[in-house]
Image (cartoon, rainbow, N blue to C red):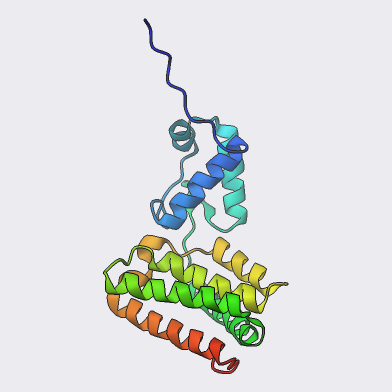
Length: 202
């Protein structure tokens, strides 16, 4: 009896959506590092699709700032210049600072409880040496504050900044214990300020 030919799992949504989802995840995780080439033929073969959805996915990633095109190299994972990195962190600081100030006035008891629970979980993970999820959990921590402080506009703006200029998880400063300890102390001070409704400190 001849066994049936194995079939590739059906991609969710359109093929372009599937390619976009896979490549975006690989960029954010650091599997595709900054400056790495993204050859269309190779991506198409690896994901079992034609060139057309790969091109569409790359156009979307380019519009998001994750892919750029270089002469004689084609599509590559975008690299931020030193000046761009500085501007990015200044922008995030301004938006997240405003979100925190507004959250001190608007955050609900339930939202505060969720934030405190996440912070305590991060502390337990740090003490146990489980640092692999801290960067992602920190993103959730700041998302919760943004949604509490600026649900109408600011949270969406911050999400756009995060999505278009992600920090690859494997290169995150959270993997350095001394940094993680300092960041967690700052998170704790922020939770305390929000609990006391202290907008200036937050």
